[in-house]
Length: 411
Image (cartoon, rainbow, N blue to C red; front, side):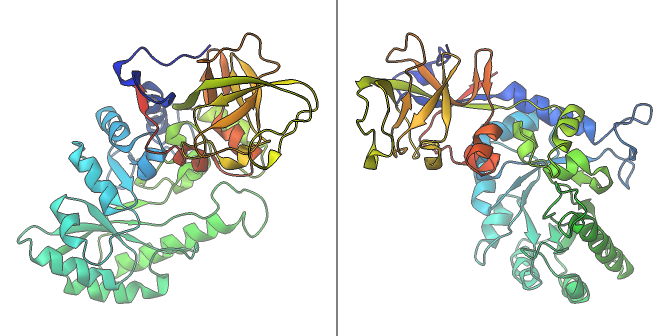
């Protein structure tokens, strides 16, 4: 049976928590770093080259969204010690949080800054991603007030996702604006793939190759204009795992850093890719049973009586709901592990509690631990399996673990 660690942090707390394995995170990071830097003598792929500067490929660890729910500061600290080259966050505020926690490695603000944030960005030595030409003038004004040292930024190219980034047709305009910015320096150029896990002979399956071609053509144009493009980076999790031609100078692991491969199409690829790059899930979400009751056949359970047992049943109540990270759509569809047995989630998941049917679980007691996903002794309920069961992605579940859930860091 899973139990809370005997740790002072677990005392006098609401009986819901997330165990986060720092060794698993470090294992995944080191596995990714070795995977994208295969030795010439024993290459993992047919593309064992180093980057254009002769150095090993860098790894930018994505720790946005509170490190996919795992706890941004603690995760970044562990990965910085393990050798992460860069970190990626969504916004200035996330970057400042890491700086205040003591993180010193470069931090890339992936969705850039909003007007008025420039001073805070520079005060905390954060690197902006520019995705509109007009942002150059905003950053230049702030950089000019800083004095001598040039401020580095990365440029995002929209290679076909049609979300963020300057269009390839705007490169000449960008070059003219950059020439006017005497206090800025281009430190890197990036793009983001829309469908890097899809390998079918379809328009979507061909999209990643088309994005690569468009990106490299844009890169060539920048260089033809005399611009040093700095660190080139394209590869997200699926591209890291399955598209070595996209690795460039730096890779940006997200979901795989936390132990989960993204979806691949065709699905048969998953086993092969997981064998090449084995990962360890880092987080287990747990809650204790705080109530047990016998419910008669035909009696409704929970809001709107969406679950009505057809036989006498033993119903347990967990001290966690969708306000903690148990996805509401798991009601009457998902299960949790109790004493190594899958117990169905029944009724509508409430904000603060969830009901489970423990009729088939022997010797259940108040205080027993339910694992929503993760490990329970020798048993495992992967978050990826839970996500597929409700038609969402693993990251959705991981990021849903709210701030009120204590993270217990296991070392």
